[in-house]
Length: 129
Image 1 (spheres, rainbow, N blue to C red):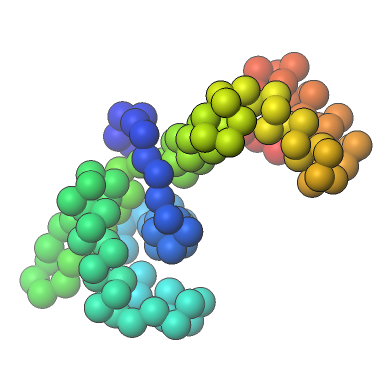
Image 2 (image 1 turned 90 degrees about the horizontal axis):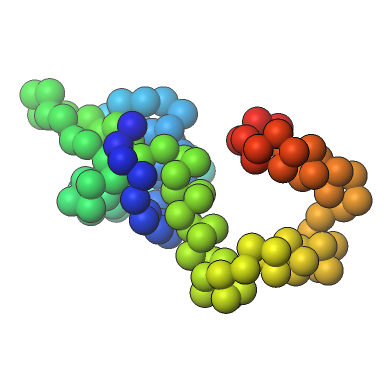
């Protein structure tokens, strides 16, 4: 997709982007229908959010007759990477080890999870589970 850049999104914007990541190019109406069911959002709210994301270069817009279609220009992994980097920078002085230590201390990571993390690190940190 597009070049990797700093992309920080709100929780609501991430929910909207997940629809695009899962479906590919999708109409405003289809995104709105899915988010109406999941979150009770109105079509106009979804249209506004998509328009703002388009202005930021996060999604691309295409018109077909009276319908607008959107597709993601950033990958979920790039957004995750960017937002985690922001979190580490803001809360852990840029030290990712401090984030991991915090998660372990707060029991967010179980011992067998740590073994999985070690294996992933040994493989070079890929995104596969």
